[in-house]
Image 1 (cartoon, rainbow, N blue to C red):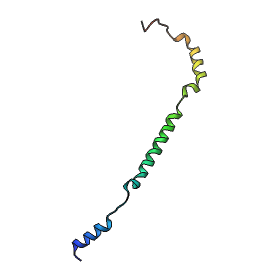
Image 2 (cartoon, one colour; image 1 turned 90 degrees about the horizontal axis):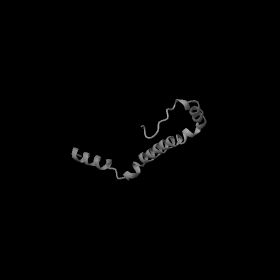
Image 3 (cartoon, one colour; image 1 turned 135 degrees about the horizontal axis):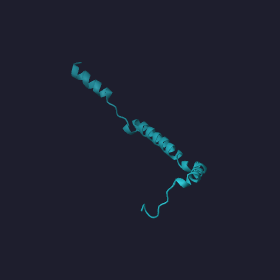
Image 4 (cartoon, rainbow, N blue to C red; image 1 turned 30 degrees about the horizontal axis):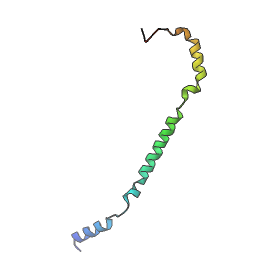
Length: 75
């Protein structure tokens, strides 16, 4: 055997015929999981202001005189 034959046989053996989509499906699964976790974190902040509505109303009553009442659109 000469060098060219060895290189040709090595290239033939290392040739891989597989389904590339199945080899990379793990990246898609990881991306879906990451985006689902981010969506969960985002949705966990829904309605946060209403959880403390009684504190907001108490603050508004305590500081009602601090608000300057103007008529119109800032005139």
